Every structure is written in C-alpha cells, then in structure tokens.
Image (cartoon, rainbow, N blue to C red; front, top):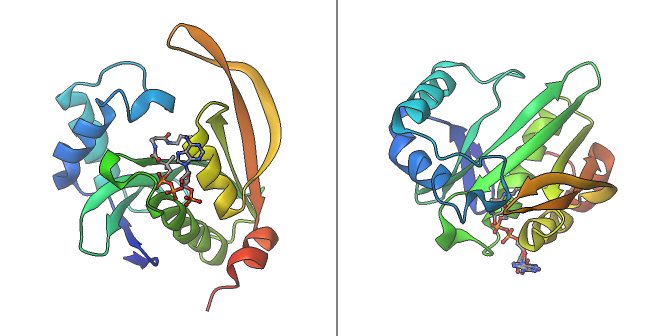
Length: 182
Ligand SMILES: CC(C)(COP(=O)(O)OP(=O)(O)OC[C@H]1O[C@@H](n2cnc3c(N)ncnc32)[C@H](O)[C@@H]1OP(=O)(O)O)[C@@H](O)C(=O)NCCC(=O)NCCS
C-alpha cells in the first residue's frame, strides 16, 4: 500500500472486476480515453486477471486508487516505462464519476509520481491529453505538468479530429513543488 493524502495506491485485484468493467463501459468516463469499443465481461476479466497475476515492476505499474476508507475509485499506471531513459508515459482514470473534481486525481498523481521518482528512479513522466479535456488539463497543471507540445488532430472521436497536448514533468520540478521524499 502506498499512502497519499486523500488516497492510497494498491495493486489491482481480480475482485475489482465489477467496478472496472462498469467504468470502462461508461461512455462518459471513457470519453477522452483510447477505449472506443465496448468491452465484454470476459475480455475485461482476462485483462484484469493477467494484471492481478503479474507482480508490480517496470513492466506492470497498474495501481488501484482507493479513498482512505477503502473505496476503489479508479486506476493509474504507466503505459510505457523506458528504464534506459528513466521516463514513463502515464494514464489515469477516476472511474467513479462522483469523485471527479474533488482533488482525488491530483493526489493520486502526486502519490504515483512520488513512487516513480523515489522508488523507480525515474527522472521524468509525461502523458497525452485531449485538448478539450479541461478537467484533466487543470488537474495535470495543478500537479505541475507543463505543456510540451500540441499534436494536431491526433485523435478521432465523436465524429471529429481533436488535438492532443503532450505534457511532462521532471523530477526536479516535482520536488520543487511537492518537496523531496522523506
Ligand atoms: C482527469 C481526472 C483523472 C482528474 O481527476 P479529478 O479527481 O477529477 O481531478 P482534480 O479534482 O484533482 O482536479 C481537477 C481540477 O479541474 C477543475 N475543473 C473541473 N472541471 C473543469 C473545467 N470544465 N474546466 C476547467 N477546470 C475544471 C477542478 O475544479 C479541479 O481544479 P481545482 O482543484 O483547482 O478546483 C478524472 O476527472 C478522470 O478520470 N476523468 C475521466 C477519465 C479521463 O479523462 N482521464 C484522463 C485522460 S488524459
């Protein structure tokens, strides 16, 4: 268990299936994610089973985000880690919409980045976000991510192409904002 201020991070468990299956089939949650096709229960069970059976490491950084009372509200992970370049490309989903805009996403990211910098020895993290995903961009800026580029018409969704922003944060920038680990 990795402790944040509002949340804790823990490994995914196969028992998380009901929530994860509901979230990834909620079109409002996946509106800005690369998940355009509905996902069957079996496909999701297979995916989650494999994640839960794989020890956490550079190759598997999937964490469940839990509130302090143990409610599972979302997931955060690195889609890719490049140990040689000491960087990771991350993704986050607060799947329970009732927890949006209450600071849980930012705290999950600060906690996840603290782990990435202090335990995995990464030096940078980055992400891509739809340019019209205002809540996510506000959350990332609050954490300290800065815009590093604009990928024009990088994603097709809901009948149109949308730009995406490439955002990144360096370990030194993170520590200047959030302090060094204890
Ligand atoms: C993106 C996401 C992880 C952010 O987590 P969160 O817990 O909602 O974010 P936070 O509450 O920490 O921060 C959101 C900020 O955006 C602000 N915000 C909300 N809606 C906004 C809008 N339309 N325009 C601008 N800011 C907005 C909030 O007020 C908050 O800022 P504040 O704390 O200064 O008031 C979460 O909303 C989510 O998972 N959404 C669905 C999936 C998704 O889009 N994932 C990201 C893909 S790149």
